[in-house]
Image (cartoon, rainbow, N blue to C red; front, top):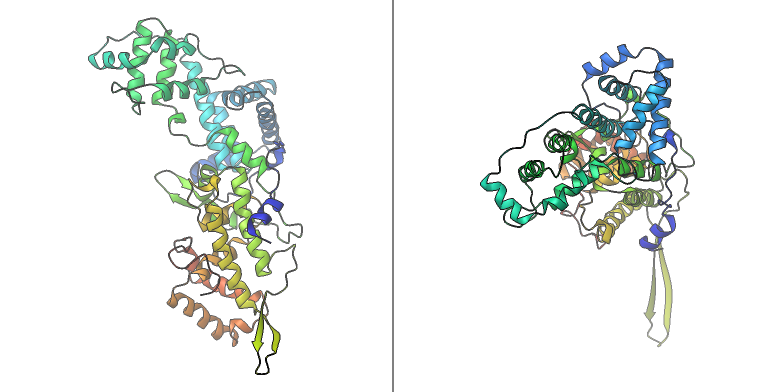
Length: 467
């Protein structure tokens, strides 16, 4: 069966938005990268009452549920307003500082992950900051020569109309949405869409001078322009929840054999920082690059490869067979036909499967929905982990596919030599799949899996299976 047909047949429905709040519980991120170990210890000491912690968790879940049932999921302040109100109703502390601590407690106790913590924390911070500057006054500034150039290329009465009164964050108006829209329609003095937020400042000042907007709108716009994380965000709450509810743990094998008993000591592949400057982990990168449908498709690459390798928990796989027919011309004018059938040994089966995986990655890369993304083997691993197809324990093994896929001669020989010395047998003679598992495990021990991953494009021809 062709790969494309298998993908179509196996693709789960990712359109339904089912809010199973149990999926908010963190089972993917071992380390906390959102705040320091010292802060974690402070929160652990501060929130020692388990009943209070459970109460805060229930309040947060209700707030999320109310947000998900709202008519405008782009309006993230609905979540912050809900959380503040639900805490008040439950007679729990609800100041700006206390809410930030509540969110940290939820992260420390694995009720939420780093991604949701950072999204919710930033929204809550903006929610309270904007409330504090409601009555703040600002005197209109004079109009500079730079301002006059901008006035010629912008219709400020139209652009600032939504801020005559500050958007009240309901299904019709949302401060975040209106601000992003305003920022994206401002033109520079050269009549090009502006990438400099200073242009927005000049226009806001002039809108204030002409009384097109009141003082509080001006000050709130300035806060969002200069202090809010909204200007650098590339992931939104609605995107996060779509992945959580449509992709997370959607491909857990029926015969799942492994449950994490000590979460803190598991593999840190998903939470390892790959960019300290951006504070970016592999899991955050997955959420930034792909939507829920793409994540499922990526995970299916590894699922199909595992079935071909004979390592899928739910699939019984036979060994691949190469069949070739021959028609031999005899001297008497007759033709003799015979068929040669060669069953691949376990090592060849494995090699074929990983080369086909490489080919499948190239095929996926050619799909319209992936053309703007560079698909890496790390992405495939993370997608398989996110969907639950592989577990924390499996990552060491699966990460080794790429190293055995394109091994350098010295590394590969080192592994094979080590296995031979330890077991007294060649890895090819060990019963499958222990030969591969043994080699990969030793490879991890030798630090090979920690090397830089690549797709293998520079090492092989994905259009052919055998070289």
